[in-house]
Amino acid sequence: MVKQSPFLLNHLQSNYVNKDMQRILLITLSFAAFYLLLACKKQTIPAAYVPPPVNNGVYKNYLALGDSYTIGQSVMAQERFPAQTISILSKDSIIFYVPEYIAVTGWTTGNLINAINTSPPSKTNYDFVTLLIGVNNQYQSRSQAEYATEFTELLNTAIQYAGNSVKRVAVLSIPDWGVTPFANGRDRALIALQIDSFNVINKQIALAKGVNYIDITASSRMATNDPALVATDGLHPSGKEYEKWAKLLTVIMKSAL
Image (tube, rainbow, N blue to C red; front, side, top):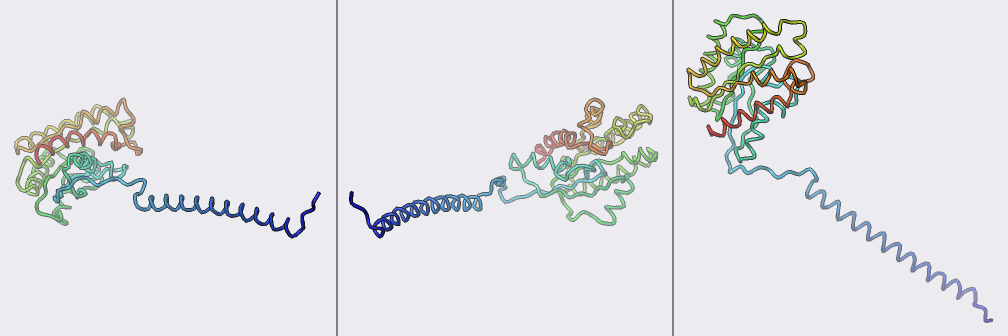
């Protein structure tokens, strides 16, 4: 048997080691290049990227007047009925800016009038205006005569801000808060009766002016059997309920625009 010299053995082993290292290095570089490519792709097209809707260069403006039901007390901004409405319309390439709200929880018709007079809307002409007000008049036991006078003034203002186009204005009826958990221990039948009385007033005025009228009161009363229609505060509508209003409003706005 011929013995190999220690030098030759070490040389051969070194060559094998170098080849192994080369393989490892090539594999490592391959994986590095692969992950680098993925990283570049993620930066170019984010996973959550959603293509913007077609706009055709014209954005429309929406003025929402009201109280807690308009500002969406206890729900996220995108769950408010005006916000859900423009989201639905965008799918048909009817694109709005974010709605301009003049609405605060607890406002009566008088409060809304004062707010408009003190801090008027940012524009003089809107593509669409909605008005939903009166629940706090009922809650605070304010007179129906006062409501009729002040609601008429507010509706005239809404029409004015819609470019005097009645087809670009919608009045929404007052929801019935008497069906919510907040009303536990109260006279629910009396609340419903009073809400209906105020709605008779706003409907008569709306129809006399020729604007659109949307009855959402019946829908709000479905919360009796569906707790999911009420927000976490136990009083105001949830996003699910607002979605129903938005779908009704969408039909009217598509026709008007």
